[in-house]
Image (cartoon, rainbow, N blue to C red; front, top):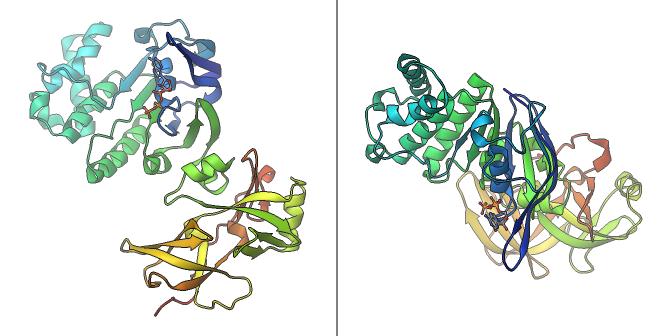
Length: 391
Ligand code: ATP
C-alpha cells in the first residue's frame, strides 16, 4: 500500500502545429488503501493522469510522489504499480496461467513454484481457477477481464491503476464486475486509481471521486458530497442522470424568477444565506429531477406551471420532460404520476433541494439552505410526491 501525491502536476503535449495542456497543475493526495475514481468528459485528462502515474507518460511540470518518494524519473517497472487496461492486453499464445505469471517471472526472482502458488491464489480470488490452462481466445469478455485483473493482483503492487476496465462488457456483467472489484479492493486494501466514463461506476465504487474538465481539477469528494454539494455548475451537470435542471434567474425580493413562468419563492433564511456569499442579483438556479414535486393543483401560488412534452416510463419511476419557457426541464417522479403529453402540470421545489450558482463563474453559492462554505450536508428533498397527476 502507498499514498500517491500529485503536486502541481502538469502535462503538455507539444504537437507540430499546436500545444495541448492535457493536465494542468493537478494537486491531489490519494491516501493509503483509498479507491479513487477519475471521471470527466472525453479528453479531460483522465488517462494522461493515469499514464503519468504508471510512468508511461513523462511529467512536464510538478512532482509525483508515491509513498513520499519522487517518481517523476523512475521507470514504470520500478514504481511497483500494476495497471489494468480496457483492452486487457493479454498474450494470445499464452495460457491464463502463463499470462498471469509472466510479469512475476520477469520482474522477480521468485521460483516457479512460488509464482504458481501466487497465480493460483489470485485465480481463486477472481473465480477463474478452472480456466488456468485455457488460452484468452476461448474466454468470454468477462473472463478475460478477470484474467487481466488477476494478473495485476499477483504482482501484489503498491498501487493499482485501472483504465476503463469494464467498458467492453455488457451492462449486467459490468455491474457484477463492479461488485467483484469492490470486494477485491476491500480484501487487498491496495491504493487504487480507477478511470471511467461511467458515473454510476464512480458513485458506487469509489471512496472519493475526482472530477476533471479540460485538464483541470473541478472537485474531489465522497460520492455524496459531489452529488449533494457540487463545487460548481460543471460538476452539478456532470454528476447525476438525468442531469440537474438549470434556469437563469434573478432574485427579486424573495422570488427567484426568470421573468417568465418560472417564479419560485424562498424564505428569508435562504435569502440571508445567499446574501452572505454574494451581492449579485442574477444566478443560475439548479434542482435535480428527483427533487421536483409534481402536484395537480395548477392554481397553487407557489407552483410553476409547465407543459408536459414527453413521458418516459422506466418501470419504477417515470421521467417527465417538460417545456419550461422553451427549454427542457426534467423530472423524475413515482410511476403512479402519469400525466399525458400536452397536460399543464404544476411543479414545486423544496428549498433544501435548491442549488444556486454564480451566473458567470459557475461556482456554487448555496446548496439548499446550507451555504457551500459550511461543509454540512444538506438534507435533499425526499418527501413523498403530491397527489398523482392525471389519475
Ligand atoms: P477519454 O475519456 O476519451 O479517454 P481522457 O479524459 O482520458 O479521454 P486523455 O486521453 O488524457 O483524456 O487526453 C487529454 C488531452 O490530451 C486530449 O486533448 C488528448 O487529445 C490529448 N492527448 C493525449 N495523448 C496525447 C498524445 N500522445 N499526443 C498529443 N495529445 C495527446
